[in-house]
Image 1 (cartoon, rainbow, N blue to C red):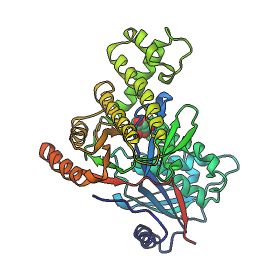
Image 2 (image 1 turned 90 degrees about the vertical axis):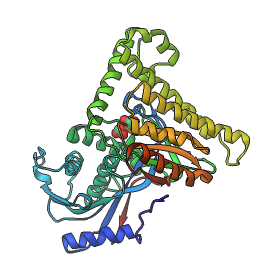
Image 3 (image 1 turned 30 degrees about the vertical axis):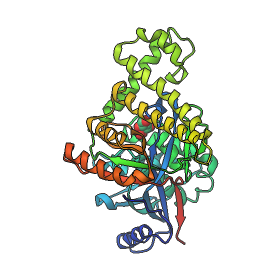
Image 4 (image 1 turned 30 degrees about the horizontal axis):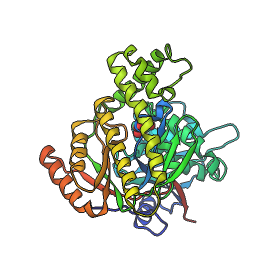
Length: 416
Ligand code: GLA
């Protein structure tokens, strides 16, 4: 089982990226911007429905080592894909067709950070990370957040524009980058947790008001285990946008019977049950899932908040309830929202059959990517063995398993 490394000034990761920067640019970087990936414990596909989510930041990061340039050019080298790109902040009106997808995040961030009275500086930067790409752990949100902090640091705006109070605005800016420069109509969860994560806490976020609470993650003797199916579905982006549209259609139809609603978040399960027959069958399933999932998040948060630090029968029962809410969430994503896939189902089935696993579900957008399971520490070894062997036997794929430490949100480490 692997544990994650934390980036600090003296870590191997820091010296690795610093050395690569020197090899690329012939001098040292002046800072490193590091933004974490995330795993969502419960509240999937609820963010773009104005609902509730409950993610944690994990100690896997996208790191950008950079220094300010005297001009407005941006020269980038992405170590993990061994690719480079260069552009000028002065000529940002369109993305050239040959620009690699990863560079769109920098182009998008630089464009959106420009504001009257704010001069964004050029940077030299190298990028590397250990958030697996396209695995549902938000590598792209981490990239846009790290790019934002890099530009703000180089432009001496980190303490103002990047201040604690402004983090929600920065999350919204990073979400716009996805919408306008990458064409993924994502919600606000991933960018927010990457910026606002707190060590050993989950973030209970209301995606309508953007009010949030850091809830202590008191899992007793249990750990968070992430299992990567290593499967990526090309369909993910188009199906994601379709689900969004189906939910909007549901709200439009239901608003004829339930006045005053503007999103699925506004509908109580009892009201939904009265009018669900008015919806086409597929729309009905999609809406039911989202409405039930919002209720599950609220219960999961209250169950966790109610747990005392001391282990007792009562607290164990509450953790078991938390786990069954995670299981129910997966079942809804599989049967009603239909964003799971056979590999995700297999991983959750194997996990749930192991004594000591209290809950297991897919996490992120779906159609591949990762599951998240809550596992008793005494069961971790058997968990790893059984998941690896049984998943491999049935799919021919070696899954990856990460033991997750819950970490702080994005940070900048100044080197000079
Ligand atoms: C992706 C999106 C998020 C969220 C999840 C599903 O990670 O970026 O906004 O919608 O899928 O919960």
